[in-house]
Image 1 (spheres, rainbow, N blue to C red):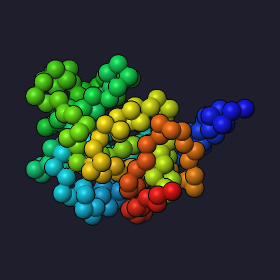
Image 2: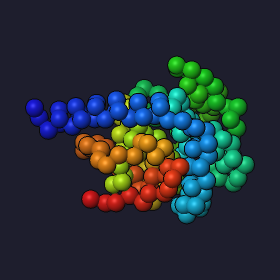
Image 3: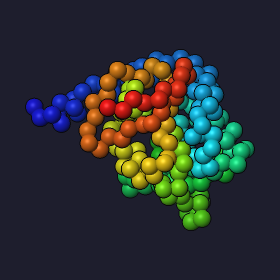
Length: 199
């Protein structure tokens, strides 16, 4: 078996474990609130003018209340949607600009997607909140296997703070990585802010 096949098998098993952990996680709303309380203490987040959020689905850390709060501030809030296998970014000014897309998942509505002046380049993002199935303390991340964020993250600037958002149950000792996998700078859970170690 090649090294890459071994990594792929390890990731498959880990994804299964993490999906079970997430499904079993209780009190997701209150835990999410604590996560975003911790987030407010991160300097890079506090000074960011343009912030990339994700819109939560299924068992992910809830983001809608935090988006609503940040929309009341002077920050520019950006959310992604998928088009032809790539994440496209648009500025969100109101939660009413989200509507159910594929599989009932909330995403920018068709009108917003067509507004050229609301399109945002990854290079404009100051802080990016990144979802994932799991993270480790070195900033390694494992997603659902589609690679959307792994393709987006290299287009962020070196000054953009990459912040993994997760429940504590999603933190593991080690995540196997391939060359395309992208590291986080910081991970925030309901228990703490983890500044990621570098190998």
